[in-house]
Length: 244
Image (cartoon, rainbow, N blue to C red; front, top):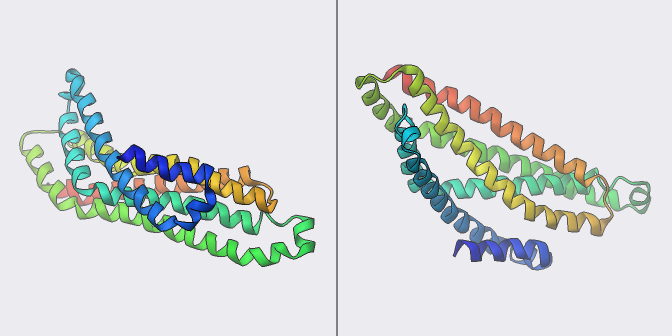
């Protein structure tokens, strides 16, 4: 089912961009549902693979970390999928915004008045894309902080069993890092196809500098999520570990 839904969404982006734009809301819902299914299947395969390496699985807190991730993903897979799609949409909107504003500032477009008429649309795309991106990373951070109470009880038990503080900190940071990296990777996969649609619009309008714009937006997105992930890991660590 997930493969069929993603084939429809991605295929329409690449081969029928007009159709995708006309049905963008149901396409977005289909992408969220399919991504949620992929998240569940992915974490199941990842945990099964981790258990297959018994020596590494039972080393340190690896088994505990895997079980924690399984539990969180099973209960929040739809939220993670929505964040993933939201990040993908944010990237496409910002790229399209820069294409409509900066990419159209060629002498021909300026003299024809097209650049001036499309600039407001571009600025709106940049603004809403940035808002969507900030909202997505804020949701990820709040998810981790809201689960800190349950994590605190689990880590208190680990401390009573004699686990080292350094090992618990590595486990906690690994979980937070995974919660930020997985939606980002999923969003980038969605963007491979979504940017085909943006590229189609840029080609139709005669915009320039598309690849530089894409590289800049992707670098900004990855940097922002990395910074938010590091800050969130420190915040969750301060909430959980000092109180155990």
